[in-house]
Length: 129
Image (cartoon, rainbow, N blue to C red; front, top):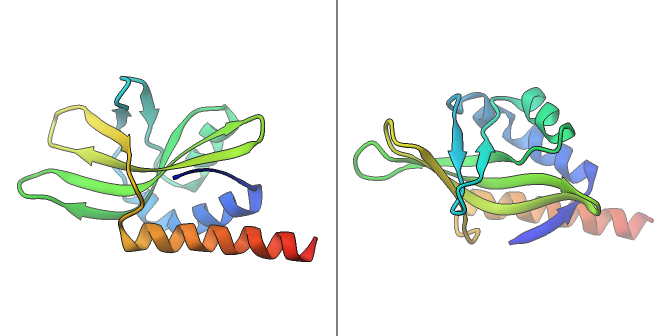
């Protein structure tokens, strides 16, 4: 899923995810194209990085696979000319190996709920405009 969201939608997303963002490790991750994506820890650091036009990863839910691999499902966010762009994504952390972030379909229920909140907020904003 790839979408442009409003500032209000971004604020809602960050408010909904502030707890799990505070539990994120202090790491960077590589995308499939080997681009580095910053993993901010907390809402203020996320906003700071976004204001400086950096990609960030915003987690929604954490799962653990067999062994030490931890997977966080959420969104990659960056700003472009049209607004805040979000892509549903997963962050995979496996011990001391470089963390990987990649786009993924919003299969996780918690991620789907966040997407629905963003859609409803946009729908309500259009209806009141």
